[in-house]
Image (cartoon, rainbow, N blue to C red; front, top):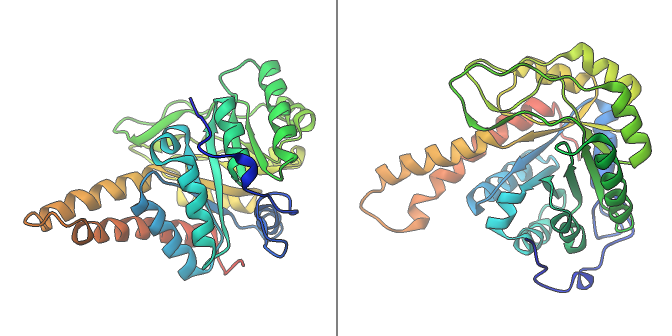
Length: 305
């Protein structure tokens, strides 16, 4: 259970809605709208270690592209919510276009804690609740978040799968109920929606294929930012098509975790006679950087700052 580590009111939020403390800073909402107009997508890259975090920032700075740091409940309970916010603010001094999201938040107290401590965006995953309860709680979170300039992502149908590499084939796909989704976004006031178009969390024996035709129907009916979870194991061709047809934010996690683990295992073998972390960990950072770079180039065709 989350408990604030310092007085939330001590971190003053700015006038801009959707993340950003400085008046002249381009907000996350600015970039989401820009992505929607220009048909590209912002990458959300989850992290739970400093190596992953550094890799994300290094690539974003080099390519001059805005990015979102993602932290699930498990990741933030390990890494520290206050630490994530302070590090975002620190890195913003050199590269201001870094935004922070609480990913798949289910604990209401944790979500409110993230909002109070300065997150730019929160994802309330109420997909395990019945529709009416999900709608009711999402609406309350939106009201609380918007007062502090924080964007909210909602989820209706649970996005299946799990982080990891799976030898089995992907399970049966799930498609969003457009009528329910329309009601949900209009009544809750969410800024974005995590959609089901055949996507799954994790990596499977064959790349996940998306139902682009269903996405086109969603785009016509749903007036909010569309988010694709499962950016690790999905067909590159389908990701490009999804971006062309309205997806403006894509979440990546499993591939970063795999790159971190592979890099660490390899480096420990290479440097087996040393105990110096600064000799062992650079290779880990490089491995994660490679994945982040590949994903950003897939999501973004040109510089978008």
